Image (cartoon, rainbow over all chains, first blue to last red; front, side, top):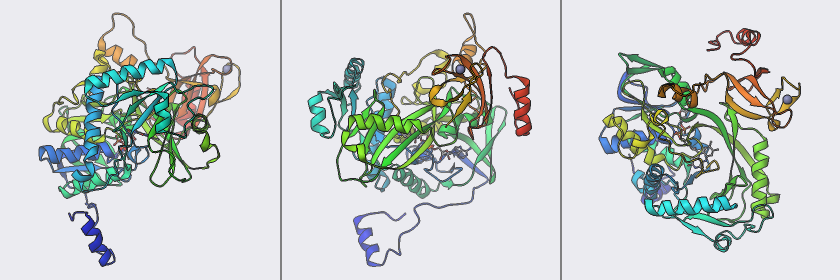
Length: 415
Length: 107
Ligand SMILES: Cc1cc2nc3c(=O)[nH]c(=O)nc-3n(C[C@H](O)[C@H](O)[C@H](O)COP(=O)(O)OP(=O)(O)OC[C@H]3O[C@@H](n4cnc5c(N)ncnc54)[C@H](O)[C@@H]3O)c2cc1C
Ligand SMILES: [Zn+2]
């Protein structure tokens, strides 16, 4: 793999950009791999990357039914934060956030991590108490957050109306090292690094069945034929229930549509991420100048990758109330992704009832931020067959044992 | 936009008038049941790609709970029926089967 650098840009500029090589290979599948990962989203690719990097396991295939990064990884609003309430969440999200800090260097790929700060508005007294509690919990967990005053909110985001008639801003939970990154680049950077380690990324290949013998996985059936494996990792987000069904077990999750939209590009107006959970909307500005806006989830099961229209109106209404200057902007694009939501709103990184088969799912509306940490933890689980400290609390057995990691209070909005 | 007919008041209700209440015909378990039974009842869901039987509530209308059969792949609605039943009516199952011969049926 030729490294990207300022020198490479100069060199290629001097020869009409004829020397760039493909970022990853597109090989035909082999008969068998040590590990097959289903799903080339951020989590599947990060799992592969850390299998190679941390455990030296490189006889790996990542199988993707569409194009890599074309699922939720390429559809999200890229908020990265780790200000969760419960200890197991703070641990894995902060691990992920800290890995984002050096991801561009680690992958030699510019993922445009921008720790511009994430602000979660408190607009009811209940939220003020909730976020103060989270700030205290974060202090104990070693996650740097603080509860800030309305005046400080106004200083950081001058375009915000903090004295709105319905829900005036009473304060905010502020994580200065939270932010955003370029979602496609995260997938592409991992794909390039995995391909370089000799792993096969097989796109346009759907897994349609799971072969098993004696209670253990032996391979998968795909639209490109059978592929054998010693270990299987299912990392397919909204399609988890479907694939688990094919492997013979059920999951504590359901698939619903979550949508987002972007405005026409405007001059720089807001340089932090703002989330307003009570009025239900959140917003940041991309480098292109578009306002990136997160919408709501539908209440019903859905695999259509488009959400209900009325959510767009609700979201935009909430944001116009919070940022009156956007009222005359046109919205350019709207899209949806299918997110996998668990009973306690926390993910699953777990062994499954089928031997040598592992699942990473249930990230729901908020798993872009966790990609590197999740891949780190999942690789350890797949390599050793047992979860390490980061994944230990996220097993499927928690639903039977009642050990929930209840984050639905901490994150009232999709993110 | 998703539109369901409320089987009680007959209104063709837009989804903004309704509230989705999750998978239908879930078998309930009470005190004394095993951990596995509670896990299935409380958390494990079919979450199918395709035909799905659900509970809905006509919150912005008569307020009553009812059932609907719907495709999660196309949002096509096959029919709605009252809440006082433990499984979908046979006519509805037959009608879905006629439309989708390869559907595995109600399980
Ligand atoms: C609109 C929206 C906004 C969001 N905003 C945020 C945010 O601001 N911050 C945040 O942290 N998170 C956010 N999220 C959530 C985040 O996008 C997801 O949690 C995360 O991207 C999940 O990554 P993944 O790799 O698990 O899944 P995906 O990226 O969906 O990857 C799964 C892949 O598996 C493939 N696949 C599925 N079935 C099969 C099969 N049978 N065979 C082969 N391949 C298969 C799919 O094609 C897909 O590419 C948002 C999500 C949406 C939809
Ligand atoms: Zn009614």
